Length: 183
Image (tube, rainbow, N blue to C red; front, top):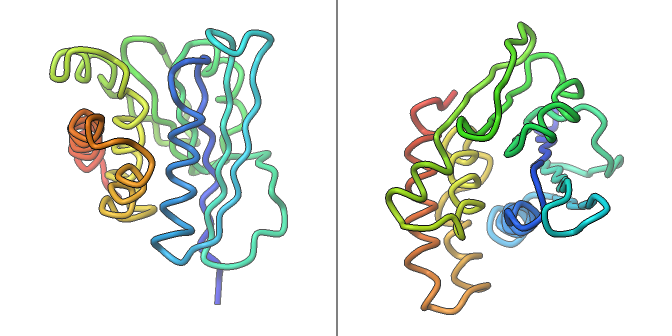
């Protein structure tokens, strides 16, 4: 039986919450979906505002190589991240980017989805603090890597109730945007 495996890179700048999104995804997979997951991150010279990369591998079997060299899914939230990481995406992979901050060039070997993530979160919620949760919602809406309810459970366990409404709205917004491109 072949193992289903997702190799995901969240990339952007420090302060966007992408490392937190990667951790939430990995926890949802392990704690609520009975999947295997590994997660790691790296930061540029400046933690806030510098380049950030968070990797997650999720599989329904053992993960023998915890390093991503060719992501099957790449999320780019800054132009710098796109320039640096888009050449890594594996043929047939998926690139998700934010329309406001990333100008992409067409690649024939990867599916590219540009979403108004930042713009939508700011206009519907009022600020970008929960942008990372919107990004996560778009990813699971598109690919169904884990159930939305699994992410909701992790959010409820991680954050005080006062923060749940904004996180839930952001997750719902992202999920709906992503679901339009589901495969």
